[in-house]
Each structure stands twice: as structure tokens, then as C-alpha cells.
Image (cartoon, rainbow, N blue to C red; front, side):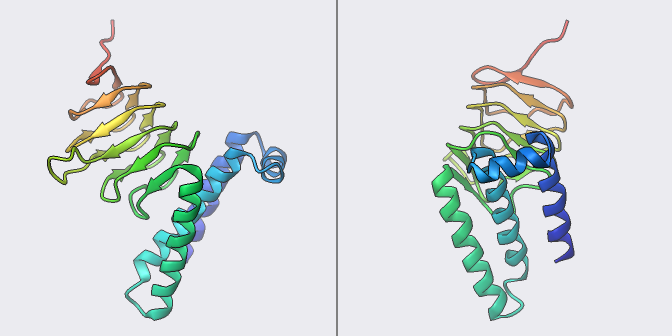
Length: 184
């Protein structure tokens, strides 16, 4: 429970900071602002992940896992987010909901940012899924498809379709299919 509470505390603080402080966070909660629902989804995702890890210990944890999954999936349908319990590491930020699909076997590194209308999954030819490094910023409408490795600190531009691995740290990927932006 300690790791779960630690992650929740860290991620809640990230959302509070992103919203402009505790007053703004409270106002957005009262107004049922979409940013608040993004945070609520992250919290339910983490809770489902916590019980997923413990589901084989006894029937109590299995029941808690099923209920936590149900809550996460219900909120996910409302927000347009489909994501596995254990695919995202600490610090996940969702800026705009709707149209976010992440294969449950894909791996998102620490501090990954999703800007909405993102697909991260297999190509349909096989079950190989993307592995995304730490501090990756995935722009609005960007897709990462297939057996792809993305290094740390990479920015994927809006609307880009990544089908090849990017092993260059700090790269900026743009276009369809996505290629690293050439620096002068």
C-alpha cells in the first residue's frame, strides 16, 4: 500500500501544479472540469494496478481488483480512455481525454505525457507492442504502432505516426511515417 500511496501523492501533486495550485484544483473539482476527471482516471488506474499485483494472494484482493477494474473501465468509457492497469509508470499525465487507447502490454516510461486522441498498440500483424522511454511527450493525434522502441526525452509531434524505433535520446519525431526532425 505504501508504494500505491506514494505514487498517488506524487501524481496528485503533478496535477495540482499543472492546474495552477490547490485553489484551482479545488475549483476544477467543484466544476467537474475535464482536468479533474483526468486525475480521477489516473487514481483509479493506480488503484486497479495495486490490486492487480495482489489479486492472487486471496479472494479479498481478487474481488477488490475486479471492482477497481470495473470502476476504472466505467470512468474510461466516459472519458474515452482505454488503458491497461500496469502499462504506465509513475508520472503519467493526460492533458486531453477522448480517443486514448493504450494496449495493455505496451509500456510507457516515467513522466509520459498524452495529449489526446493517441493510439499506442500493436500493428495487427503480430502482438508486438511499443516500449516508450521516460519523459516522452506524445502530441495530440499521434500514434505509436507495432514493435517500436522510443528512447528517453523524445517528443512526438501532433499527428505523427511512429512505426519505426527511435533510439536517439531527445529526438523530435514528426510526419507520417514519423522521422526525426533534422537539426541545423
